[in-house]
Amino acid sequence: STHNSPHQTSNPANNNTNNKPGLALRSMVKERLAQIIALEIAGGSNSFSCPTVKVEITQNNTITVTLGMLKEVMEKWLIPRRARNAFRIAAVKAIMYVGENSLKECSNDNGFGVFYELTPDEFAILFNPVVVAMGSEETVTAWMVGTDILAETELVSRHRSDSVCDIV
Image (cartoon, rainbow, N blue to C red; front, side, top):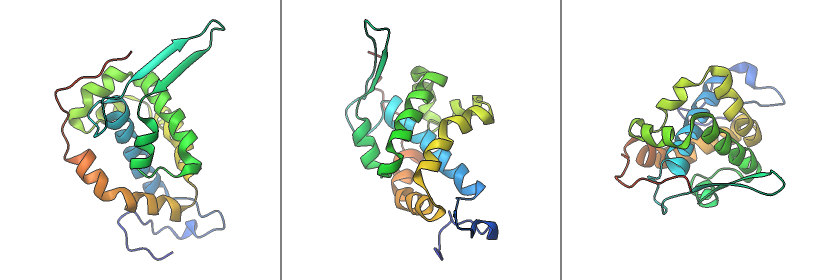
């Protein structure tokens, strides 16, 4: 593929039949996913109503986690359908790893600062499944390009509003 994109990797080794995204591209995607989860799902500063994280324990000792507005966030950010289940799992794990309040508190630094406290292995465990589920380098590049303007307006330049959302 000959895309003229800042997200294009120029690694000839990626021209195999698997067409896996290169390391630099995977890193950019994981960072963007972390920002989306921090700001849009946990941060309470999205363009939707204030999201809720609801945790319930049933009589069978099953834990149910509900992330309010998750479907709308996935549609807004063009998360590929085949990657949506992996994205849901990553969102829940991210909130459990670092805590919803930590994600809210760091939303002034674009929601990513708290993720620096994770080890590289923990970060990879959270976000690699989403990148893998997205598929080929071409698909991942198209997703990055397709969300560039949204990321610039929603993630980079946006500051957290004064409203605060709490765990229900």
